[in-house]
Image 1: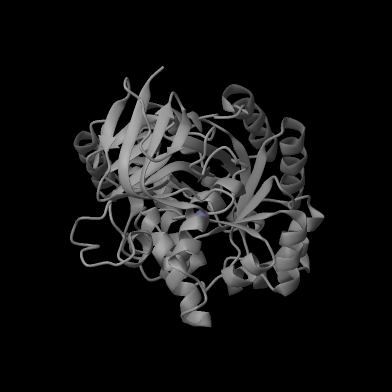
Image 2 (image 1 turned 120 degrees about the horizontal axis):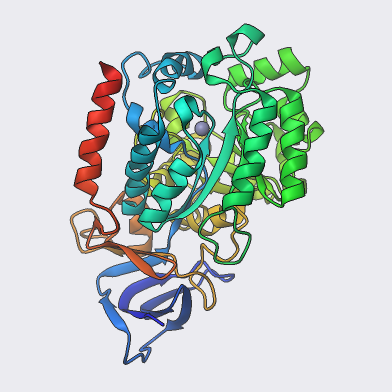
Length: 446
Ligand SMILES: [Zn+2]
């Protein structure tokens, strides 16, 4: 079995149950798991990665993304719009996508995440124009060696029925449920160490019916998969919920079976105290997307209040049309800064932000086997070189990752396999993929 010894790291941030940090430490990886963490480890047959001047952290976990949107970054007309106007600008462009657009844009998005130290990502794909399928993205992740939690999203209420998306981008609810069953049966792997886990994810309360929300929850429980959607993103979202359903989003979610350990909601910027308690009580997770919330002017999510009562919180870069970057370490920094904007400089420290980005995200996705550097856990980790310009002069290498960043990961291992080496993705020909992506973007623009 392949062995890799990461040797002499300046600091190893384990994110284990005691949040132990080790100085001048080694990590031994055997196959896909961590075999040892400690000092002066002996492994004569292992490949060696020298990590002096480096911090080693668990791989970051991204809990919310729309990878296909890397093809629509910085679109004029969508740059300065609020959420609903932004969507209306982009829907007609997305309706021209096909399988190749989804495959290539996913590769670009995954590569961008890997370079920022991310080893596991979920994806929320809720439109399937021109013969596209969820597996267009799964094939891209498999090829790159990234741990992937794709979700089969959906929209069913088009403009003619009072919804937001154009009718051409919505599907009928019977076909949606059939395809959900198909992709779970074909691709979902419930086992420990799984590289692919599929979730079910109607897009949002304003683009599907109550029936589909309820049916998807029943199906997810039947199949043992997780549920994901957008919730309480901004004031318009709350107003829509009150006007259409007569209840706030928390009540709406609870009524339809959308709370529990197997559910996580993106954004939750506007949850009130009662809803935060509901999430804590029920084990419902939150994907906090600070840059997207800033970009769309949605507000500051009450992450401090959520964490204080035990809500599971992870981070998400959100789609690349509303960020427009996919750098998860940048989100980690933004998470810390944004809580400070509303609550003061002691509202959140660098280590807590890093915990949310790693262990926190893994727990939101139901991956207790990831997000910590402990014997027996999956060997998903990032090695950060802190000898460069970003952290020069810093006094605390671990805090520097968040305060001084974002920096690029030097090496990234997923399931014990090096996928980023010396700051380069080694599993695909990235310059070629970027070239193809730019050709596709030009074609969509013309
Ligand atoms: Zn989103």
